[in-house]
Length: 178
Image (cartoon, rainbow, N blue to C red; front, side, top):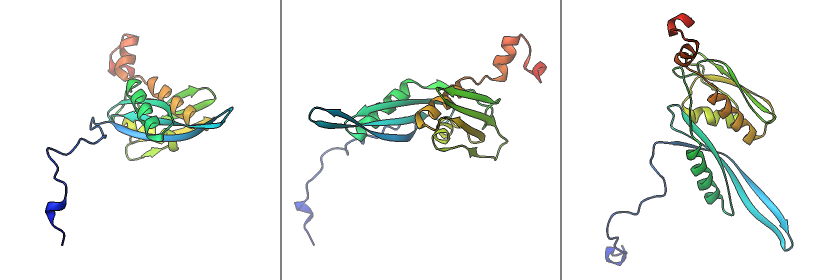
């Protein structure tokens, strides 16, 4: 057996880890390798797409570019935190059907009964899980580009209106709308 005296002794508490415990859900959607051809050859960089949400109706997305993958992810996460929006939810689903559009990408968001689950493709599923929606049906139409799908999904979620907002805009009570 080795003697414990030979090991280095740590003084003070353990160093803090890089993981921030702020209660946010981070989803890495995609990492792309980008190359730029210059006189001396090719320069490689990385672009990361990240979705951040609190699981309680707030979501944001961001893209970051850097020479290293972890740096690109950190930049994308910081941008996603800054771009967070509030989403009106109806329990575990959305209040009404909506279509999000960005460029040639379209995402159809359809409310679902409790217990249905998240019926969505890869990038849209990550957005729904980050925002805290657990029952929804979606369909991506048009572009299948991850960036366009995420932007269209977030744009569609930003269009959602609660029954209280609709009643206020129409000058009626919530009970009169049904």
